[in-house]
Length: 141
Image (cartoon, rainbow, N blue to C red):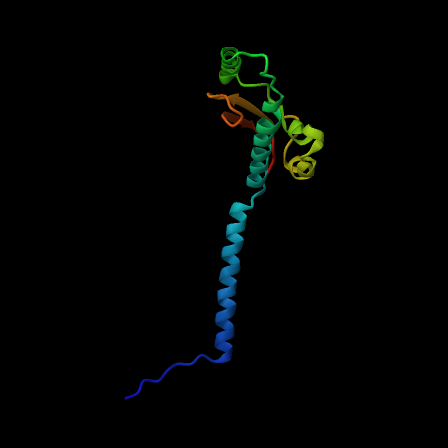
């Protein structure tokens, strides 16, 4: 006896396509809400700006040319526990001829630029990439 193959009709195919597309849309929306939250976006951008500020601006401003290696270590060790002076979000947006001004509308929408700040702690061997950062956010998400 030959088995009878079931063929889908056009309306059944359309319904299946609609169901699959709906499932994909729901999954994509769920993923976007998790990963594209304003809080995640803002914190990631502040982290990116703070790394650029320390590594490519602040560290370069230190004048170590007249320090011996021992004096350099003493200077940096002093700030390892206490940290450098806090840097406000406003400073991150305005330094180096306002090179990050394009991010101001997004960051200022959620955060206070004067009370959101970053504090840098140099760490041994005290290179431009050996430091830790503490963030203090004054933001509403």
